[in-house]
Image 1 (cartoon, rainbow, N blue to C red):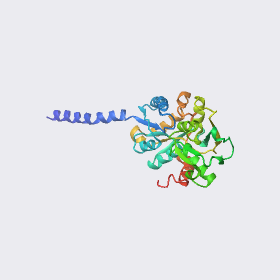
Image 2: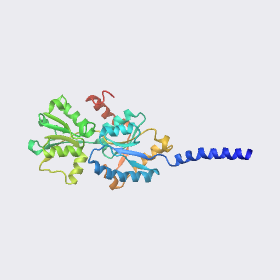
Image 3: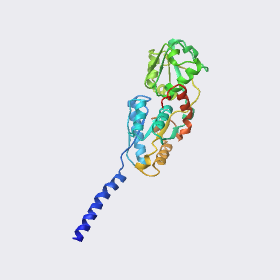
Image 4: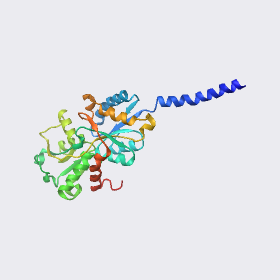
Length: 293
């Protein structure tokens, strides 16, 4: 009887312990995403390779989750559908407000001094200038995403600074193209006369042969500001073990393969922290984008 009871107890212990061990050895996949600031199909192909790199570096399954909009990126992060994201400056701020404890852990080389380009269709007669192009007043103007730092927030900041009023009162029509590639297409085609976009996307599209400089040109480069960042949830160590957050940060800092970095595109990554993006917080409040946060 005692022997039979002992065997039963041991069996029960094994049944309880084995699932626990398995769950520790095989935690759920670690998921990351990125703001859709360029053509989604190209991004998915590129970030799939980044997922494989992170899987190898971290020793856990890593997957990339594509999203349709900037706001969807923040929602996925807040709801823990993704634990890591490549955000723009403003979406990073939104995510860290929505998920207290989240941390900016890395930024691209040059992201501490990012710039936007104001571009114009050649038919406008506007020409490149070192000074803010006040001649854009009264024309049609397109931003990128409503939540883009380089495609909306900072360009709007400089527009308000120059004219003392919001874009709707400066331009005859204001639009939102959704991403930087669309902004280029809309201005180059003449659907909008002027627009603002991420300077890296302009250079990347130019290299890809998608910029027709007989139709569109850069007319102004903004002063620098902080922008893109990798932000991670503060609770990842609870699932993947103590020190996992630091391990993710180091894997990103160690990313040196040009083919992987082309997904961003960046030459490499450096450390970042939440305080670096305080200018974005202040600007967003100033132009009314964080008043309800």
